[in-house]
Image 1 (cartoon, helix red, strand yellow):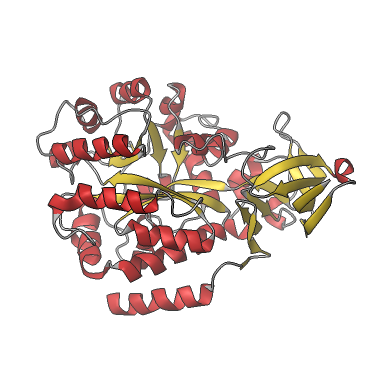
Image 2: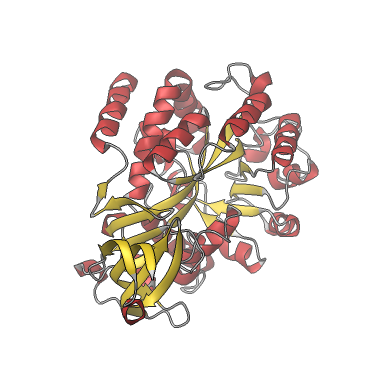
Length: 433
């Protein structure tokens, strides 16, 4: 049987028993997985290229549900600050002075490199000048939902806030057929930076174009006092009263969502993405993840941007996510490792309306695959995949394929010059300093 790529000598996880199965293969034809299983089933396969996994564990590519890739420029710029001061005194002024097309392109490229090298193959990115972000992601070979930012202030690329919806529409139209790896969307920054009318207009545009709407909401206890003309008793109530919430709205953070808010999100079938390290660093709190899951809300895991994290490693994010829930619920099994892993896999894909394409290793799914070196002291003995959540790190990822294409092999990025990207970003950082 002919195939384009055959991954050999890899380990797979038995999804029924959670056992690690050695000496397996994965066949890839075009952009999709066509077969996988024990090597004994692949003796008659002929491949254009064979990649030897050297006993590494194959996983579905990780899915980062929320990121601001271009903000790599601001990594470490304003640490140890509360959210309001961090935004208003540091981040917003830095963005006003330094965000331009070149910055978004090169700094997003750096973010893509960091994510690819730590096993992330899909990201939902929200920022300004998002056509440049999409160009960076496509050139690196990364799958991305690129959401153009909407805000009621002069913004990079949109000096007149009155043109924010028109700019978002133009961005979506440019990206609709730009690359099979790129899915356009809208990112309405928050209920306190977007007026009710802007939110309504942004949602209507999302409906008209058939795209998702992402929005920060319920991130801090001060948020209700920051919203002009708030409808209802809470920021989530506010969005509901404006008819923003539905199955194509993704609410980011939701740290301060109470039981009634969660009931509303469940009723409207809105999705949620939590970013636990960002929540901890800004002392925003701990999102009520178990209560969300108990209501059947689809929840993904995100890193947020490097200005509030400061890294984009989803293995690190999974570890923190699982552990803070144990503390919040005072139960060691509050949100098990296996559940957290689905938040960057099958459930994370569902949050982005991609559950039929990515998030699992099965025939017919896109070949977004990462190979993890488990033959290291901190991952031995490997009794099961839960250890990946609690002990693995992005540096354990050796090889990455996205859409059936090898993007990184033995930790070498193949699609672009990483040294050039680092040099360009550091020139910008010198000007920033």
